Length: 460
Ligand SMILES: Cc1cc2nc3c(=O)[nH]c(=O)nc-3n(C[C@H](O)[C@H](O)[C@H](O)COP(=O)(O)OP(=O)(O)OC[C@H]3O[C@@H](n4cnc5c(N)ncnc54)[C@H](O)[C@@H]3O)c2cc1C
Image 1 (spheres, rainbow, N blue to C red):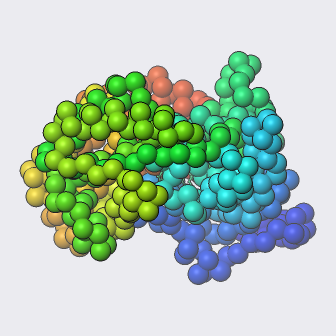
Image 2 (image 1 turned 90 degrees about the vertical axis):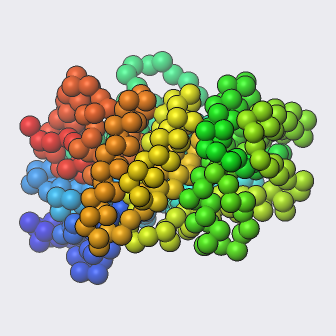
Image 3 (image 1 turned 45 degrees about the vertical axis):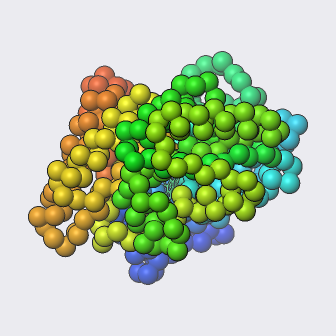
């Protein structure tokens, strides 16, 4: 079958490059998760027409096709678990249009988040979602996972900025959704259907994004707390106070310890630290908001507060948060990076629960996250070679998932369902919602060739 595809590409799309070299295929067998399966071929399309031809060919023959951006997904979303071909979109990386007048950018899916940020900055504009992986992750991947990031509390996630899409459907037909206006009430919102669909409904070949003015003034502070519940209450209080910080990040004791060991930073050994930043266009507005936040830190027993007095001090406060991923990666040989989000009133109880879970199971569970939108990343650290410890880690994760549902939260705030969370999807969505998702999959991809095996979307 792959020989046939090779012949098809040579004759019909002679410009398309592809590989079935072992080293390449091993690289394409995984992403930033622990899942892996080797595809038969990886293809680098450079146009919508090429994607269309490849999908039509694969659809007729039932060949699985997994779209891929930068492969930074954390739940196995881009792992070709049923083999077939990987469609690597990294060469479709043109910014097709920047229109400040219309406040939008039109991009190909392989444009890296950071490259769009660099192109927009000289115009005083930005695309606000700010995933920590933004220097490598693609906008196609961001849309297909509904990526969030450090600024979600104030600016929302990718879904809030996608105005329109061009999507190649499983049968090769090209569909346009949405448009170029900042608002519309026209018909079903098909654009949002594809946001977060993880490559299971179609391959996104063009994205129209809303852009925002880039804030120019920032006020930044960091507070430490002697217990996580006080920190959680401070977060809930801030988000109820009527102001909207751009950044509200939390790190718990285990994360602070990991960062201290990994970096040269001297951090207070406390139960939790919160990094806060307000942004805007005048010092008056950012300082007014920060003063309110500092009042809430004090009212919730912050043991220390450091406010940045200069850009240099601001960067010093950010350093600790930026070192969190590196620090956590060094904690043990196996990590389960969770990605829950809970209603704001449940942030403090969830932090407390994770702390108790860690003690009860005798495992390090380090929590960092975008607390301003209730999105926490408890990371369960264990020795994967020790079977008993691995089992304990998975039991602890199972208890965590039950608690998320009890708190009316979600299993994934931004990392997606992929393979890791697929068996749990039904615990969050009722039978009717699951059936609707299955029906949509069958409509858009009746032969289940698009990223099969993901999101619990099994073939009827
Ligand atoms: C260190 C680190 C930090 C991270 N921080 C964050 C964070 O702050 N916020 C966050 O949200 N995530 C974060 N992530 C996760 C990851 O970066 C995001 O999920 C990102 O959006 C994935 O983009 P990608 O280009 O790597 O996509 P991939 O991993 O290649 O693909 C992800 C999914 O999108 C699909 N897809 C990709 N392109 C297309 C397309 N054109 N059409 C249809 N489907 C497509 C794939 O099939 C797959 O299902 C982090 C990951 C790492 C490793």
